[in-house]
Image (tube, rainbow, N blue to C red; front, side):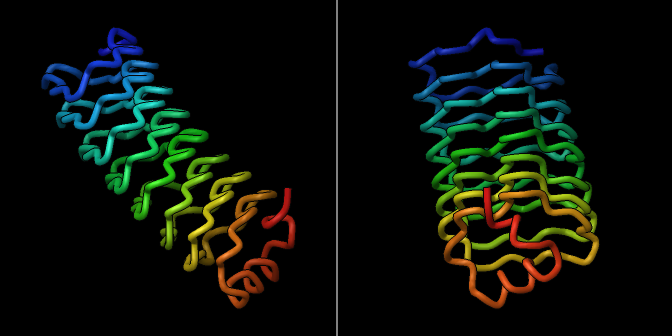
Length: 192
């Protein structure tokens, strides 16, 4: 396990995690603002809470298929992150996991996820479209709040609950999409 050994290591620019590591622990690379590249091996199953929070220079990360858990605030404030592929083995994406990833343009939510938790993709200003898989039943509060560039979203019939504010300040969603969402779930999904 890698704990908070590298926390606030501002000069760290890249790291190769050895194959013996199975858990990237809580706050492992918190506030490593110069970190641009990280290689996560297939041995890792857990990315802990706040593991990469505040790594504002990180542009791309490849999460291996072995990962099943992405903790809360795991990639919070990774402002330069443009693309992330969440593998099919991930069953848990924590609260605010990708909050404030303002350069993120594309996400892939795998079919293994059933709940998109509170604030998971909030403030992802550059995110333009989301395809939610049929496995998802719940979209939490503020899950996509302030995704100002969001123009397309597919919400399957499997979704039975969308909590208040899930799409608050997503002002570029076309009116026909908003109308459909409001008809199914109520106006509260676009409000505080």
